Length: 207
Image (cartoon, rainbow, N blue to C red):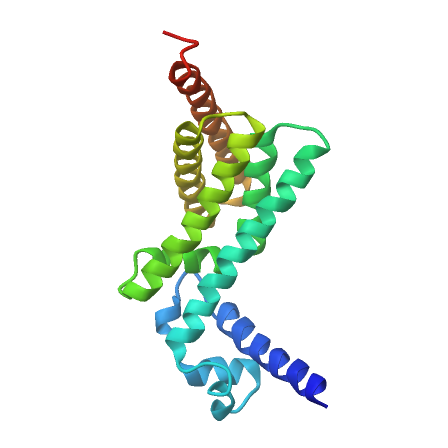
């Protein structure tokens, strides 16, 4: 019975999380949501909320954590696609844009809360972006045999550019997404070439 109760509890918790995400849009941020609206969307009584979250802030922090995890998992899948052949940068950017298209509310949450009024939310988003950056840094260091400093600089620049492109993609017509994607790929290739040049200088192969 305990197993069934645990499954039911997780199912209810998931309903609340999905209900909050479903109500986010270009016009509505998480800070505009009320507990009552979330529970109504989930088809639950308002009192059920407190069995899973202390307050709306805890729900919001959970959404940020999930958004970051979803993004990291997606990019891990991209690296699996890369192993089958193809351009690392091209596959990564296209996978990221697919994520934006399929999960616009998740990405909006990260963008908005990164510069929002809540210090706790800003810290949570920055932590998720830092995880994402460091995971990319480790990958670049291993795949391209870069030194630690260069791989971090490349990863940091790449994440900055890709997140900026993602923000633009949210308000870009579908027909223009391809152009935005290609422009982002070219920008990342510039950075990759610069990173390799810097690496060679650091190890003394280029004066």
